[in-house]
Image 1 (cartoon, rainbow, N blue to C red):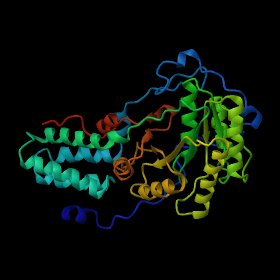
Image 2 (image 1 turned 30 degrees about the vertical axis):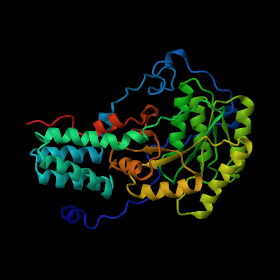
Image 3 (image 1 turned 90 degrees about the vertical axis):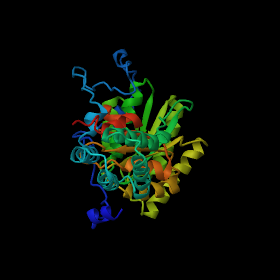
Image 4 (image 1 turned 90 degrees about the horizontal axis):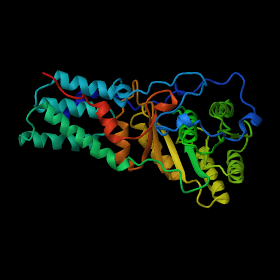
Length: 369
């Protein structure tokens, strides 16, 4: 551990993320409430194949975007690049390789305790000559990382309740509204009737942004405009969803810092108001986490879990510059189901979390030489 602390001395806590790069452009002419409230139309029959993971293009004549693999999406992340570089620089099986691995995992936000436990187990096995070469150690690392994530790989099931109420929460700038738009597209392409509730009445243009997503996906949006009471909007949306026989209601909420007690209390109020219409609602409190925020995500989840009873996570922005290790830290710290991960900007890049595909995308496939 001493080598590690020498290497990262002075590294500070991650800053709050800026406004998400993945948010859709603000509409030049926001959809009207009347247009947004049109009944949901069934998706074309051609979209039925692979509806969960492959989303059809919204344009009638546009081509289907090519769906890139997990490895293609994750190989550019800081975590994947550093792991690949590590094994290239240290192809020999020795303690120096494990020391470098420890540094790489901790700086990728896997967490000190989890990293130390994992690396020391590999070190013990190496000294017992369980690994013939670095490839064998790489295979053992792969197995250990997948094992850490398997318990939280629990896909979200939105059947069984009608409407199934999904309350989406998170701090500013994590891609929350964009995630809602992608979820609406996913569920619509599963031939479910979907409705959105514009509960983010705090941020300027948030209502128009959600209405634009509704217009794109032919999904109705219940809204009252900026400055309206968020709990009132969600209350009206749930009553409307019940009357129309909607399958899934996704409620947006104002992005807020987890340290703002007043806003966190307002979020708890939204949850209580939903319970007055349907005692079992919300059926899922889905928190969106920015994969680039590092260990700060831990404190965010802790505060939101205490205020709203978070039941599932979405980790976004795992492609590009994200360190990515926060997924392992969240799994170890909370054990909350990771429902989806964001691997890019398009709707099809919101993937159901698959721990095997995720880990395989981070690690080099095989060492050469």
